[in-house]
Length: 212
Length: 257
Image (tube, rainbow over all chains, first blue to last red; front, side):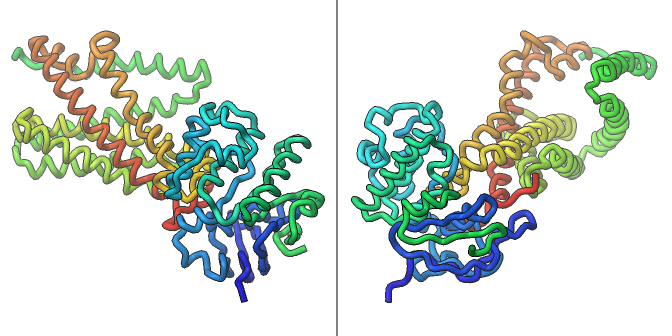
C-alpha cells in the first residue's frame, strides 16, 4: 500500500509554554487537502511541522512514510515548499527572488513560465519586489516556490490579505496548478467555504489544537 | 620630546564642571542619563587610575608576559561589557570573547611583524588597549543590531528557510547589515578625521609637546590599525553569534522578547 503524503502521529507542539497542538493524529492524502479551523487552533504551526520549520515536543511527522527528522532537511524543503501567510520577499527584483529560489533547489529557472503559472505576466520580472501590492507579492511568493519544482505546496492562508476577486483568481491559479502540474497542496484556511471549494480532504482543528 | 605634561588634581577637578553640564542637560531634557553619567565618571576615574598603576608596574618590569596578561584581562572585561549591549543575542559572550581575543591578538602580532611597533610593553600596552576597546565597541554595536534585526526580519528569514536555504544563507542580509553597523562609525570618523575633530592620540601628543608631523603619522598608524581590528572583531562576533538564533536543523529558535 502506498503511504499517505503526510502522517501525523500523536503530535504535540508547544510554543513559549503554551500547547499549540495537542496530540494530533492524521493522514493527509495526496491531492488537494485543507486544514481548517479558527485562529488559535494551530493551523499554521501544523503547516510548519510538515516543512520541519519546527519540531514537535512529542510525536512524529512523516512525509511519504518517512520521519521528517531522518530526511535531509534542505532537500525536504525543496520538495515540500511552504508559502507563508504574509509575503516576505528578499530585497531585489522579482526575478532575483525567483532565481535565488531556483538556485537553492539546483533548478534552472524559467522565470517567465513560473510567473505565468502564478498568474503574473513577464513584465513583473524586473520589478522591485518590495514595491508590489500584497496580492502581487503573494503571487511572487508562489512563483518562487514553483521555481523549485516542488512535489507539494504548503499554503498558509494564501488569500487572507486579499479582496474577493484577487482571492478567486488565486484559487483558480491553485486549482489549475493542481490540474496541469499534478501538484499536491495542503492549504490552511479559516474559511470553511474555501476549504470546501478547494479540497478533496479536510482536517478540521478546534481551539487548543485538537481535532474538531 | 619636551617635558611631559603635568596635570594637577585641581585641574582634574575643574573639568568636573563640564560633567555637571552634562548632568544638567540630562535632568533638564529628561534624557534619564544622569545616573549613568555619574557612574561613568566615577568608573573612568577608578579604572584609569588603577590601569595607570598597572601600566606603570608593567613598564618597570618590562616583560611581555605581563602585557599578555593585561590584554587578556581587557578582552575578558570587554566581552562581559559588550554582552550587556547584546542582550537580545542568545549566548553572546563566547562570540564576543572570540572576536575581541582574535582582533587584539592578530592586530598586535601584525603590527609587530610588519615592523610598525617594537615588541615592547610601552608600545604594545597602549596599542592593545585601543584595539581591544574599539573592537569591543564595534562588536557590541554589531550584535546589538543583530539582536534587533533577527527579530524584525524573522518572517523573512523563516520564509527563506522554507525554500530550503541554510541558516547562513537566510541570515546573510541581517549579518551583513549588522557587520556594517559595527564598522561604519569608525569608517566615518576616519573619513572626517582632522576636518571635524582631532583624534585622541594626536591631541595627546600635541599637548605633550610632540612635533605635529610625528603626531599625525602616529595617529594615522593607529587609525588604520583600528580599521583592521574593528573589521576582524565585528566579522567574528556576527558570524559566530547569528548561529545561536538557529537549531542545527536550520530552524529559527523560539526567542524570548
